[in-house]
Structure formats: C-alpha cells, structure tokens
Image (tube, rainbow, N blue to C red; front, side, top):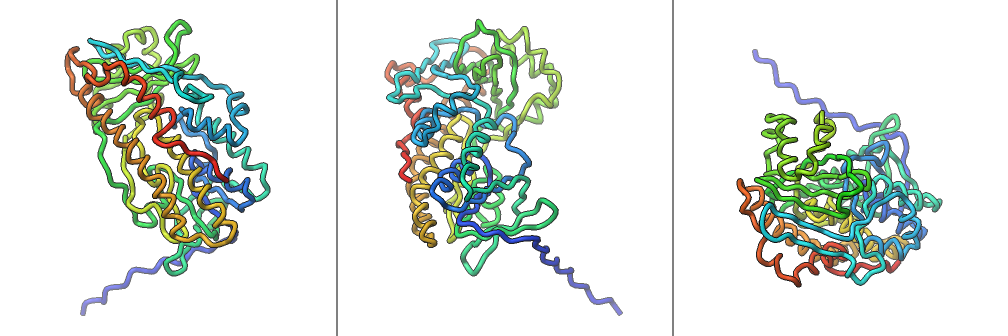
Length: 414
C-alpha cells in the first residue's frame, strides 16, 4: 500500500517582539523617503523611517541636486546650510561627438537663484536631511529594518512587519509609503509591476582623478560605438561608461584591458590615469530600467520615487523627481494625516499631480536614449553626428529648463 502524500508544513507566524504606532511609516531612506519624513515631521506628524541598510552610504547613487531641489531646500530655509557642505557646481553641459558640431547648454540662463547643478555624494545629502528631521521628537529612523510583510485589515494596509535588531517587529500606521527604490519590496508585496520602455543601454560607473586644468562641468563624449558622461567632482571625474543593453557579460569577458582601451579611445585625455582601474571592484554596474506602475496607491499605502516610476539615469533627474513626489505627497496628505483619515481619493491626487510630469520626463529620456545614445552606440566609425535639432541655436535653452527646473514647478504648501 502506498503511503499517503504528506501535506507541506505550514510556516509558523513569526513572533513579533514589539509593535509601534505611527501616523506614517516610510519604507526606504533614499531622497524621496528622507525628504517626505522631514516634511511630515515638521508638521507634527509622527513618522517612522525604515531603511534596510545599516547606514545611508551607497556608492554611485544619484549625486546631482538640480535647481528645482535647491528651491525646495530654500523654502525650508536649508539651502545655505546644504551648500556649506563640500560640493561642486555644474553650470554647463557639453556633448562632443567624434566629428561635426558639439552641443553646449548653459544653466546660468535659468530664472532661479540656483542656476547650477549641485554635485555632492548622496550620502551627505541624506544624512543632512535625516539630521534635520531628527530635531523633531515625533520622528524616528530605524536602520537595518528589512521589511518583509504588510499588515492588513481587510482591503486596508495598516503598516509593515520587518526583520532586524534580533527578530521581527511591527509598525502600525495610518499611511505606509513605499519609497524603497527601483527594486521596491513594498511594490512587490502589493503585486504591482513596473511597465514601460526598456532602455537600450546599461552603465558602468567609476572614478578617475581630474586635473585642475581640465574643463569644469558635465561633459558627454561619443566615440566609436561608445559613450561616456564625465561629471566634475572637483579632484575627481565621476564617469558613466554607457554601453548597449545586456552587454555587461561581454565586457567582463573581454577584460579590464579592453575596457581601458575603449575608455581612452572615447576620451584620450584619460590616457595618463586609466591604468588606475585595476580591479572590477572599482567599477559599479547599473542595469538601466525605466517605467511606471499603473496604480501608485492602495487604501493605506502610497508608492513614490523609483518605487512608483523607475527612472533612467539620463540627465540625472531621478533624485529630483523623487523629491518632487515627496513634496506633493506632503502637500496633499499632511492634513488628512493630522485628521486621522487618509482616503484613497487623497492618495489618488498624488498620482494625478505627479504622473504627467513623470511621463513627460521619461519621454524626454526615451528620445535621448533612442535618438542619440542608441545611435552613438551602434556607430562603429567616426561619422556620428548629433541630430539636426540639437544643432539649432534655440534648442540649447530647452535641456537646462527641463533638466534643471522640471516640467512643472513644485512648491511647498505645508
């Protein structure tokens, strides 16, 4: 006689060590989460910010703070203190193809007190924002909190359960915000999938010394089947080496010597220092994604930043659009959080205000990727020329406006 099939054991529910209460629980200590936490805390709203890592230091995150974000910092009275931290300023953008006319754009013509891109390590910016939030007794940051489950009551999300600090913990909140980036665990838990275009590129990030005699600002270089963006970081160049999608395995197989040769062919002035790249640990790989989820919200939950709309690194706008999401969320949700009743219609307003500018900037990124980057990467000789539109005199005013200030201005109202 055959033995009966044994049913799979049911996993025991985790033992919860403690339960905390909050008005808002924010998952993710990146730009969107940190800024939203600060904006809500200064309104007297009890906020708990959860970050899966033990610190905020992640290499080669977005380090460009655009004029739109600086204006928000000014509204908070924080701009001067932020600019007191070590940073560099980018006022110009130059793209140099191997032949033909170059493209030059200048941020100094923008109608703003901050006509430049501020470049500083993102960890400095995040630590600065969190330090401001910590001045409010109703704010708490918990590092090393690995969110694994949502707390639900019927169709309503009431908080999260996370692992860390010796076991499982639970936070119950009127509103849970997923601000945990392009690989969002919160987005996964609600069953949303980011849908959109698949950019035709991936990126390697690395740093090399910068000589004081070299040009300042942001420089784009187009070579034979290669493209690089070089960001002035004072004594360093932060360099994005752009290559066709899914080509990373081939680059690794070819080896560092071949990569160094390609770098020099694209930017010959780096010949005297490219040998400093001696190990793959010096180089970070970014698989580029871009898209949006259909619904950024559920009853009791909201997605913002890359959790709602993963951004391509083109033009470095991701951090700034994530912060604009946070400002709009704070504007619209502060009062409902204070009253104790956040309606699904309140959450829908956040998506309604932020979806159109997100679609527009992602469309702009897609044009750049398809009309410039993809064609440059497909070029095997030196005959690549920039599109005719970029050679028109008036066009140089458009990228600084769109990149620097965004599609629509976002102002703090809470």
